[in-house]
Image (cartoon, rainbow, N blue to C red; front, side, top):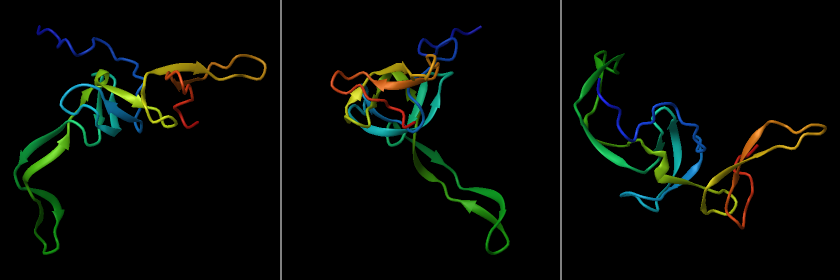
Length: 136
């Protein structure tokens, strides 16, 4: 049985970075780049960030099953395709929407009327900010 990769967790990780967040890369070839999270993969502890960790794939022309304008099959052009590759979540920091600085993410609870609410929300841990990261 092959051993798991050291970067791969043995169980899904509860990530504090969500789809739609703006993040800044803190290490690697794209350091200081900012982008929006397109997808999160908690089982692999990875994120897909727009415009970051770009790779080039060489593809062939291929036919689709949809009919084209002239009755034949439609052809998708090949060539060099640049796209984003997933990167580890530990290599990015969330950018606070209010102070516009990369920050660590903390959790807080909403206040209830007669009892403490169990609803958690994310907050900026920057010492000068401390505002919620979630729009709700």
